[in-house]
Length: 583
Image (cartoon, rainbow, N blue to C red):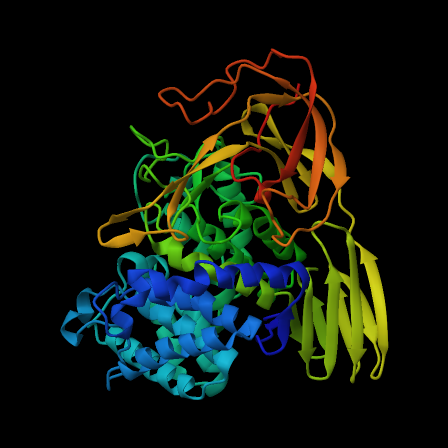
């Protein structure tokens, strides 16, 4: 029932601010991780002695489309070296992961599902004809191991069984082999049924579990979308049910669910892991492709324009493991962390704060967003997100000229050699062969307060959430731990608050237009701002902490006259208050 199909990196190219964002990523940690980080540089996937499980596949999953979208020949060559090394080490049996065959039964085959997905990404970018054969060998071997009981899904593989369907669907469309359907059924049979664990989502605990793990849940949202067709099942939009409950019990104003590292409730001072941001985006991209329902594209915008840039430094050399909605400091905790299951440095900015999965996995978000700007079905093209990009496919040429979401005007420059239809946010346009024209639309957006738990409010303008930015001092940390060096520019940073944050709104917001900087979501030069009246209040700190504001203000009576404060997009505010009372 798939409504829309993805284009490839040869057909879509980023433009405007989106291209600049990808260039910043290529100049930062993503584009250099294989040079500076042991777990990628010396990985067992390429014959080294470092981690041989998820980190290289995670990194390649973003690095490959980033390289091809930018046409960066150096990066394309480096990606090929990794793929070459992985294919050279594939066993005659088809086993592709870097462990001995005597270790297969204890190896968590989440990595098999992940590298299979990466090989599809590489093929769609490069057209390398070695890939379909290598992938078929790998999945046929995986099927036989599961079928004869040599391996079983356990731990991460059990909770991420649906991730394999990206590759299984790819192969089935090419070959139609019946064993792929049998593999699909085996994965679902051994995989976790998330309907069984819904009751555990309502009451967060200071307890680590796979069934409340935030990344598992964000991946899971696309499970039915990617698997139902091959399984011969009716599509029921179970993702909407799951998303609604997760938002009701663990939601944030920017469309995330709290999870530090497991579901953490509605408090604005609990965190959300970066891996979950990028996986939730990826789930929404596939949900829109399968259903064509605009709600998934709108939710994708909310994540991409707020949560994603907020938790990565402007130069994209540093990132957080978890971000907080009300985040007044990013300093290591000297005592017990505020987080439910994360460590003392989970919200500082750095190379590998708390754990390195996000170091490698955050790379996929912007490139895959760029690859989702246009989708197609027959003679109809849909513009999923109205951001600057170019499409050149099958005689259809479209250029999107815009600074959305920072400005409202979107112009489509059309030059087509064939008849086609263009769908933009449920509007339909028809073009004839030989037509060259520009059409412009205005995206209508409402400026509003949205209700948050604990009688707090957030300011929202279309897909942008606004927050009070807190000025800060950056403290650079260079050191080595467990053989991993942090050295500028890939070092760690603490952000220490140097301005007031204890405010309550007492007026209505006024939008102030601005200009888009060379850094699109710049913390120093935000592309637009808001002015609003606010009063200081006796907010206070969370009990036992000096660097975490109280979950709710201890008193909302004004302790100052109203003053005008400036709000910026959430994605531009590294320290921020985004949920405040309104007097």
